[in-house]
Picture 1 (cartoon, one colour):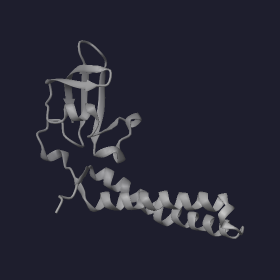
Picture 2 (cartoon, rainbow, N blue to C red; picture 1 turned 90 degrees about the vertical axis):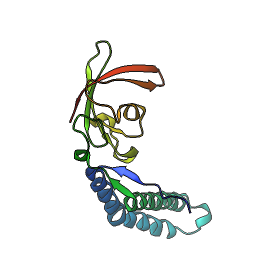
Picture 3 (cartoon, rainbow, N blue to C red; picture 1 turned 180 degrees about the horizontal axis):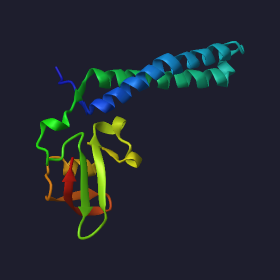
Picture 4 (spheres, rainbow, N blue to C red; picture 1 turned 120 degrees about the vertical axis):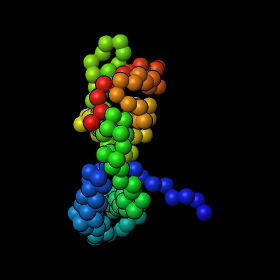
Length: 159
């Protein structure tokens, strides 16, 4: 039997997914059902674009609900306080500086794309930057492989 995939995430990320799931089930699902009901009342379903559109939306909605339920069922909550305080791990904020003298950048490493929000300073643990930094400590120099080529950085702070 295949081993079940786990989904590492922060406690905050789990809460965010639970809130999204609740919204999808309580608010979005009834709206789509109502759209289908209204579109069905227009008559011939074979040429009813509103009906097809609503059914497509329902399919995507149900797929997202299943995905979130699966992720929550196999969620692995990572406690960033259980590791060395100077070590980059999931859930921690890491500040690094591209060498030789670029401006420092700070990101929180979060679990998976579901939690990631680069504009808010949250990057997925699956991103090239996070993969390169995880496991390293303050004052270590790390090479991050990016599509534009290797980037040499120094970790300046972990919290």
